[in-house]
Image (tube, rainbow, N blue to C red):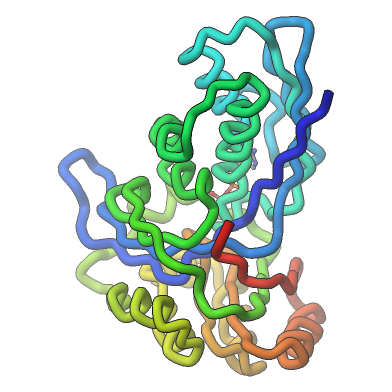
Length: 285
Ligand code: ATP
C-alpha cells in the first residue's frame, strides 16, 4: 500500500520583524499563503522498524537530517509506533529558496502518517507537534492562509486572498534563514502594514493587496545577493503588480491578476533568471 500526500509551497505576502526576544529569536508577524507548487510524497509501510527517506534532489538529505524523517520519528516516538515507514520525496519546490519546502514535507508526513497509523489527531494537535520540528511546520500542516506571530508558530487563520497568478523567480543561490536574521538591523527597516494586508485579503482587494506586500528581510538578502535584487527590479519593470521576496529569500514573487500578462512576464524573466515558475495562488484547503 502506498499513500500519497502533497506538500504545498508557501509564500510570505508580508513579513515583519517586531523585535529581538530575550531567548535570542525574533518576534515576527507574517502573512503566509500557499501556491500551486508541491512536492509529492509517497509513504509505504516497512517490515523493518526503521524510517527510510529517499529524495530525488542532491541538496536534500536522505537521513535523519531530513525534516520529513524528523516528522516521522517524532510521531513514532510520541505514539510508540512499532512499524517502520518508507518516505519517498519528489522535490518540485526549490530548496533553500524561502518557499518552505522542508517544513511542508514535514507537515505532509505528519498528515499522512496520522492516517496510515490511525492516530486520529486533529490539525491542531498535528500543528502543535510540528512546532518542535520548525516554526513554519504548524502553518504547513494547514497550508491555507494565516497571520503568524511569535516565531511563526502562533497562527490566526485568514480567508484565501483574491485569486491571482504568481510568478516565482529564483537566482542560482540558496539562502539559509538562520544566517539572515542575525544580520537584520531593526533600527533601519520600514515595517509593512500587516493590518492593511489582512484587510485587503479579507476584502479580496487585489490592487490593495499588491500595494501592501513587503518583507523586512529584503534589506539583508537583496544587499547580500545583487542577483536577487536585479530579479526584483526586472519583475517590477515587466509590470507585475505585487512584488516581494518570500521568507528569507532568495525567491522573488510577483502577483499578477490576468493570465496573459502573467505569461508575458514569465516569458520575459525566463531569459535571464535561473529558475522561473508560473503558478496559481491557492490559499485554501
Ligand atoms: P528555511 O526557512 O528553513 O531555510 P527554505 O524554504 O528556505 O526554508 P528548505 O527548502 O526548506 O528552505 O531547506 C532548507 C534546508 O533544509 C536545506 O539545507 C536542506 O538541505 C534541509 N532539508 C531538510 N529536509 C528537507 C526537505 N525535506 N526538503 C528540502 N530541504 C530539506
